[in-house]
Image (cartoon, rainbow, N blue to C red):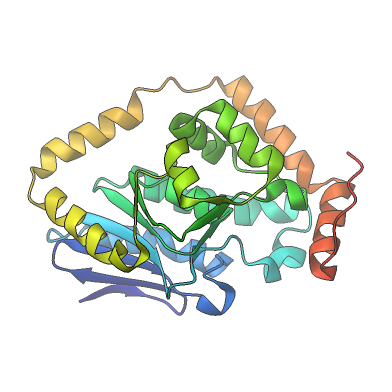
Length: 265
């Protein structure tokens, strides 16, 4: 049974599992504005279906979970902080839906999980990765600002030092290293990934939904929120990245396939 389907976002119900598929394999499942827009409707449909006990997010094919943002939209939707604001809100809204889902969520990670892919995976309850998966957050290579709420989520999962290392170096790291960091909960051979995820879904589906929902809500609620002033200051710093000459240089360098030269302005 298909719950919601768009050109690049597919959702299906298979027994107790609601599958959410990032379906942009030509760009290694990079997320476009249209894909962000589809996520809230997909989650609403799956949440409303009583048969669904677990929601699993995955990428189409075997090359990537999500390889980041669709950079073909950078010049239009990300050219400045003002231009980026609309797309950033779409991204934030989609990620809020994933994190706030009443039903358990699992990110099934195969191939590349880069940038927005890590952001999406971090907003799931559990992350199960193939041993061949590769991770990175490359915002610093482009001069991008990163959503404050997603940064806070990552800090809660892997701690401040690991978050700084990931962002400061912008390097790629393996599934085994992601597991040691705590970013990934379980690593399995690539050939066993879907079977292992299905097994976990069966275990969850056999348990009491009200207990799971109560624990999920409580765990996500006990961390103290930052003050409004702290959040506002963080947002200003992130938005300033989009108006910087470094960001313009990062976009040009990416387009020209060269190393950027950043000046801190």
